[in-house]
Amino acid sequence: MNMIKIALPALLLFASSVQAVEYGTFQMNQSALNFAYKQMGVPMQGKFKQFSAQIAFDPAKPGNARAHIDVNLASIDTGSTDANEEVAGKLWFDAKTYPLASFVSSGVKAAGGNNYQVSGKLSIKGKTLDIVTPVTIKTDGKRAIIDGSFNIKRLAYGIGTGEWADLSTVADDVQIVFHLIVFAAPVIPSSTH
Amino acid sequence: MKRYTTTAIVLHWLMALLILAMLTLGHYMHDLKLSPLKLQLYSYHKWAGVSLLLLAVLRIVWRLTHKPPELVLPCWQQVASSSVHGLLYLLFIAMPLSGWLMSSAKGIQTIWFGLIPLPDMVEKNEALGHLLGKVHGSLSSLLLLLIGLHIAAALKHQFIDRDQLLSRILPGKSSKGKLP
Image 1 (spheres, each protein chain N blue to C red):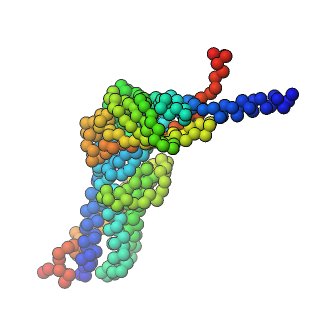
Image 2: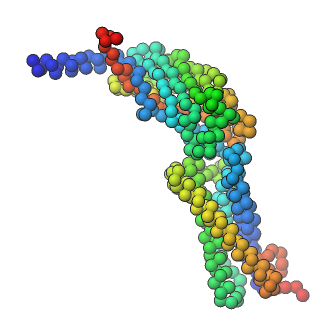
Image 3: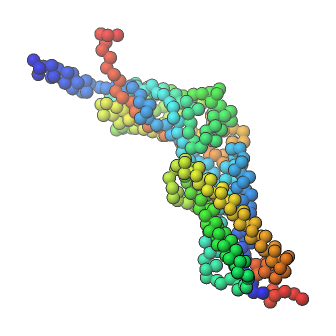
């Protein structure tokens, strides 16, 4: 009798790991959203401390994958308090008027192995532009590790206008580097909902 | 009165001009509100600082390999002069070095004239960056004080003692001594 009690859940577990797993529970505390740019020719790095993501990814059906990421712009960390206050201001993000930057995927294409190409719309400071970014997604049944990076031109979004529009001081190119951890979506028994 | 070598004279005045400009620039830019101008001035300050570090090394090597013209001074003046000169040489190295380390600790690599990257000898560390900023600022005050003493002593010799000591480091004059 005891054998059955143990074996049954084990079998169920085994069964679920063989089935296609959908990854959908975003882990903020293990994820990172960094950026890199040049200031007076010097490579600089920063990060956003707060962002949220709704991601759905089924390795068996990558074409159906979806991502919606919201970034709290006021959570920026450029490395100095002065600069953090400055970039939240009107000339940069104008974070009071536009607190969030968002990315909404519009399509995911498999590109061989763990590689995918994600296209979507990136909205910052009231401007929405199409972007395409290469992404690698590694899965181990428990979690999906999503890595990628793409470049944007800050002035295309009106980030750093006025005196800051001078690109010889702060370069136009900004590289966005993301590392997202998404756990397998919890199995919700259909009978209880 | 024997003069310093031409190299020593050129190094002295070149560094004097640069150091006074750097002290002025350093104090001015520090209080600026963040702006492109501020970022530019900080970069120029760092580039000049690295240049001064190289000049200081050159100057110290020159000083160690070339005896300065001999001078007979009262004992207390000998001690005062050696102390001030010794501390000045120390600061010629400590000022740019503390600035370089501060920049690294604040997470901003120094790239000399935007071309030659200097290694970061310390990792990014906010507390260390703050501390090195204080050190850099305090050393600049000490440097200003020593420069004041140095100039005051030179003026005393020139206008009170009237011993032509200053002519040793002034450019252009004949090494044969004073004109009639």
